[in-house]
Length: 57
Image: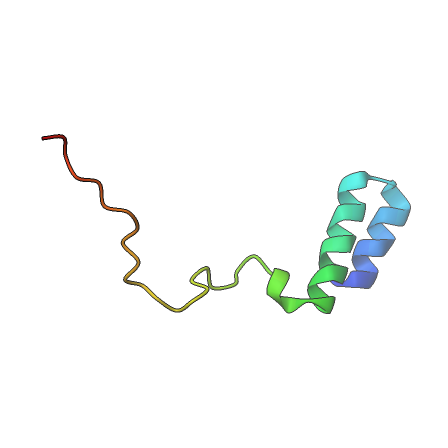
């Protein structure tokens, strides 16, 4: 679905969900970094082990 189709769906239905769908398409066109299928590894590091907790002595 493109931006125009999403807008026309909203005009016909008046649904908040249709409007949000239209806005999400519009925002994705403005900022492609908002797309959900973006790579989640921001810093390209895969060796981040986080905090390592030591057992109680």
